[in-house]
Length: 308
Length: 313
Image (cartoon, rainbow over all chains, first blue to last red; front, side, top):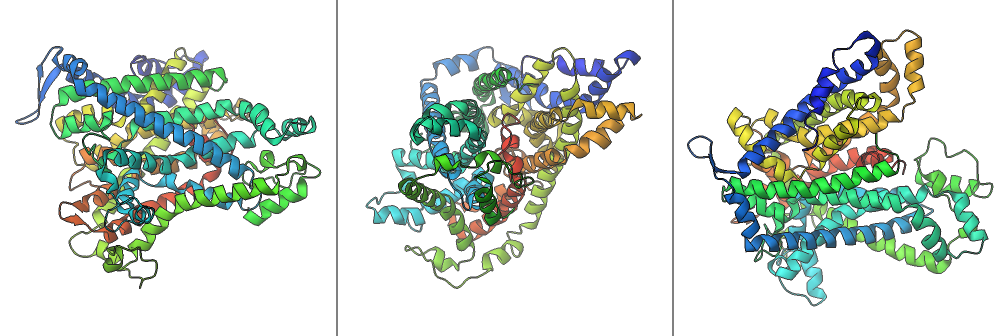
């Protein structure tokens, strides 16, 4: 977001074509409206959030920004709770991404071996991806409701009687499980695309050379889909940074901050405590994290020769 | 292509390894074919069968339970023991369109905001994506990177400054405001993805069209666009799903004049308790259209969701 604010003007400049450079002029004109709108929607907010991070923001009686120097930033780096929020966020990401990757790959391997009914099974497995995350959260609450929930009833039969969203550990496990429920299919879908692109002759050759199923998988199949797996991981990683709807409607960060990941903290700071300056600092830190992921993504596409 | 069809054609073509009878079927049947050399043993098949059954149960039980609960009388929902047998009722659905919690405005806001942002994204994204795919300008890599990082920006970090800006210009609680907010993620997505689809169209086609006397615009409009119809539809559907399912933006930017269905669902959670029957009815209402739309473009889902980095099923 920060790197290339001059691009829109580059596009606009090339909109006046000199006759011999007609092609460039045409593509520039094609890009202009979309890029200009996108620039307005991203550069302006970016400048705003940077300004906010150095200000004290007052909303009552008309919007006003008072210069606050580095106080928001100083607070960010000295807030003892902040470290815990980031640590908890990291744990949440590692757990959800790890579980989704492992389960997704296993699921893809199973579906791949399926001969009859693969389309039907795959279609059914994909359904959670299309459910609004906020509904995943609300539905999860319904299922683990301590008095009428289907899953809490099941857990009770298995000997666990507590309120799932009431305990710090179980609440964390529950929001992880909801995210895993929604997004494992995405990993499975992408992995399956990789698996089906491994050429049949390659696998046959391995089989003829006496490689067992496990050996073929380990030495032929998995290495050939490593790029695809990396794409799947990065796609998930960047969305995991973006969404927090599930936590917002289930535990709202509780109990006792057990599920308070950084975006939830930001929303709370801004829209419950109306401390916009401090929220802006948190937002910029999150932005930095997402840019690192985006960079990795583009680098990797470059290496595969896929970037345009 | 039906399920049975796929299985049969695979069985028929596996021995000779190369008949083309899968053409036109779902992508992936070709590479997915198992060689007779790697037939799975009975033990493995049983393990796979059990694993898939568990996965299907884990996936489908919550959804089935939601739909069932939306059809249950409230007493059956509120019983401590799960009720599988009950007298189905449409009370929760009719309740959505009568009485105090009139759902129609929410539905209209959802359709307008999600549909509006999806249409705008595809139109502007097609133009810009084509320009990006064919442009030879300097700094194109920087431009691409800027576009993709816009798409990946955390929602919370985008909402914050937009909130102040929208307040200044009076866009809070308006549908145009919500559409603009959704464009922050849908527009870069559409530009990037459509540019991937356009990059797959051979330049030679446009060149020969120009030799035949087409202008650049005509070559784009009559040669390239028809060839990328599936890409356009996929982009539209995914933009629609992203915006329709949004909660974080609508929570901050919408008010009585622009609240969407996900907000309506979350508003059923009140201090005095939750009307689960209504919630399940709204949930079914929100979820089913997106599932149908998503499955309709299943063949291109991988390309779409990986932003063009992985193709095929």
